[in-house]
Amino acid sequence: ADGKLVGEGDARAQSEQCFKNIEAALAAAGASMDDLTKVTCFLVNTDAYPAYASVRQALFPENGPASRTVIIAAPVRPEFLLEFEDIAVV
Image: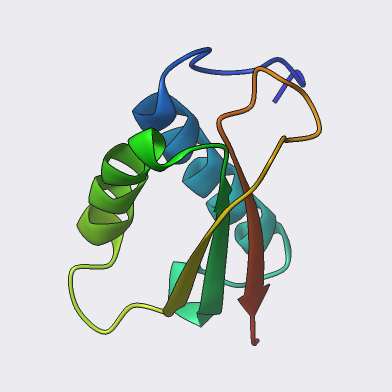
C-alpha cells in the first residue's frame, strides 16, 4: 500500500503480495478474483517458480484463469523476483 517492496529475496512473499494487490485492484473496480481470465507471471529465474506456483495453486485449486509463466532477463527493479500482468473480464 505504501509502495515498498514486500518480501525482498522471498518469491513466495512477493507472489502472495502481488495476488493481494491484484485482488485489491479488482475490488476497486467492482470485480473479484473470479473475474480473472488470464494470469501472466514474469520470473527472473526458474528457482522462483515453485513458490509462485504453490501460491497460484492455493488461490485457484480448480478452474482458475489461464496461466502463463515467462522467464525474463531482468525486472524493472533488481529486488523484484517476479512481475504480473493480468486480464479480468467484468
